[in-house]
Length: 417
Image 1: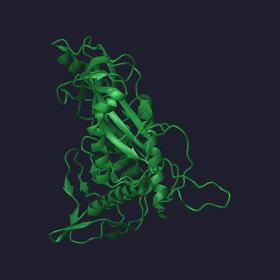
Image 2 (image 1 turned 90 degrees about the vertical axis):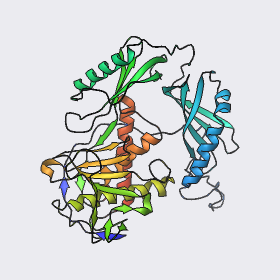
Image 3 (image 1 turned 135 degrees about the horizontal axis):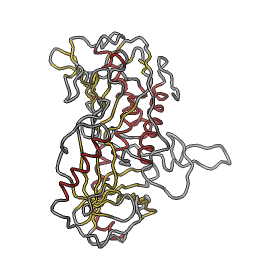
Image 4 (image 1 turned 180 degrees about the horizontal axis):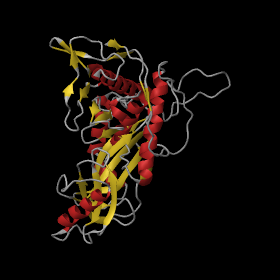
């Protein structure tokens, strides 16, 4: 791990909209928390001992995997306990454990083998493995739904999705894949539907992943959301920092083996693939000038490393998915692209170079913002639309700012801008 020297520079941009806060589950009751402490920590005489309660437990990736496997092995019993119908099955998405032993297991549902969008739920269990409460995305009943659709329904779904994408500025002429038959449960009565994803580019050059839900029987559009999640902020370089790097032959590469194997790539103004992994004969990256391609690479690598440390040390989360595996970063995307985005399909962050390619959007809070989109996708799965989109975007703003304060870097002090 070596140091990287950079001078400060500033670029401006507009933060996208948002509101509120990510929740993984709702826990009944209340508890007082003592960060980093234990239930037996010393307390002033006459004062009650504080309980760490709902603070997250420090789980290793293997411990988390064991919790998920245990929950998956008992999904049939859980479905029966919850009174779900014979056609319904549960699939474990994630398990979060608190320091007091409470677990919050997020399940997704299927109905006659079809995925149920909007049917997810969280079961909160005590340390004694007794169900404490259940939080449902929808209280509607899944029953009596015919899964038969007209023969021309997939083609109609694709056509409707393409129309929606074109209205949003996309020039795509076909869907990325055949429409997926689903049960749409997010709003009102559960409905047999198709989910179609349209790729290509949005009108500002951002990749497009428009998800369009259409009624399988009437062809009507029920909902749509954008799968690419963007964030724009003020770019601030972070001065001289320490990076996690490794050796490949006689060269050094921007691969952080201490943080899940995070890699930083140079797209060199391309818009697809990974470009080339940053590699050079010395272990000092960039010179503080935007004309040096490695400067933006060092910013992105630093941002990813600090964000990894923030989630691990504050929340006990090893990586975006909690499995100890890093995402990767791509810099120098497109030409004068004034944005940055998280893409769940590649599990990666991507950064443009800003106006006239002079101001890469690789500030620390932007890095924290983008990676937090990945955490949201891996936990709450908030689609990027309407209220859930606001929650998604606001959570990234909040966590990105928290990363900046956590870093406590004098070259880029924490702020709320």
